[in-house]
Image (cartoon, rainbow, N blue to C red; front, side, top):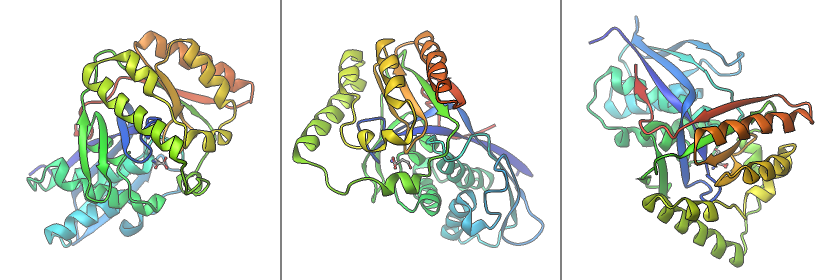
Length: 310
Ligand code: HSE
């Protein structure tokens, strides 16, 4: 057995406008790197965390990566196996890019690979979702499932983790705009109304169903007509300065859709080629400058592989 292994778990875009808590896709970059190595005493310890400005706990049971791995070890009856974990955060947190989900995925996936348990990614999905749950207080797999499994994942039911990867039409590119402001998922969830009108439910259901059909048939026009969020986006847009200006620009540039990535503040534009994604990114950065907000841009295809060892 190797003495140490390194794994990567990618960032992800959750909700994708039409599927609050039930739809998400993985990006090629950014993401987290996690190293798992043989320890010197029984049990799992976190020995190092970088890229988190001291904001993440070293305590295994309070850390998303530590906890997801702990749940797997518990299931295996292997809590005494000496293991060390290093967490290298290579993505911003509070960004809406599934940072805590990437760590949770990296932790459990890394330990699963290191121990060569023979369990599949689907077998360990629940542990990763439980890891993320300790960060945002809710059990939903719309970041964790794509980060672990790759691709665009539809979650029919979060409780039973009944998930299905959708086909990805050739040519889809994403421009993610991350404004340097922090929006905490817990708070961004807290402001949402608990009731949804009958009318909105009908529109959103139609859009989600049509989006899925569009993905299966590579019908970009249908995808473009469907990528709309009537329920959550209007309630969260005020958290992101210039949101509607950037959206208007992106749609004018030909984006199939534009919305908030996860709980925000990142935004995403679904594009039909990489040039469109680059153009939208550059123009978005200019617009955000008017509010004196710096941005990072991530132009990426949809990551089909999810977490991997490298
Ligand atoms: N579906 C989640 C939300 C994603 O929008 O609150 C962020 O965890």
